Image (cartoon, rainbow, N blue to C red; front, side, top):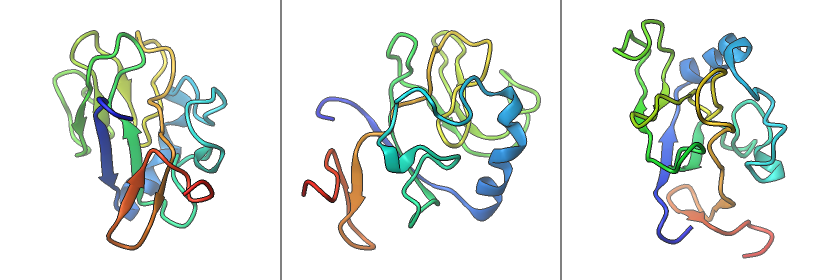
Length: 133
């Protein structure tokens, strides 16, 4: 993970509830392409014990630009029906609040979820799984 930006976002219950509403607009809603550890291959793309926290490598899977976080559900200049998530200004790729890529954008896959675990309620360790640590 060294040298790569890491995005850590705490999502609200409302944000988590909305994830299923846009699955039809996503290229890989079930995260079948391996861009995450097995424990994050779910709609939240997070550990089951902490679905509110998403940890992502902050590089677009198109050409490696860094997407910008737009967490609010509101119209944006790039999407009048924006449901929150990440937008890459370089070539227009869009990702939802779980880092899942929308269809018909340049990015071919979801944002990558690195290995991570919670050492405590206040400490997040990125780059290792708890089984390895």
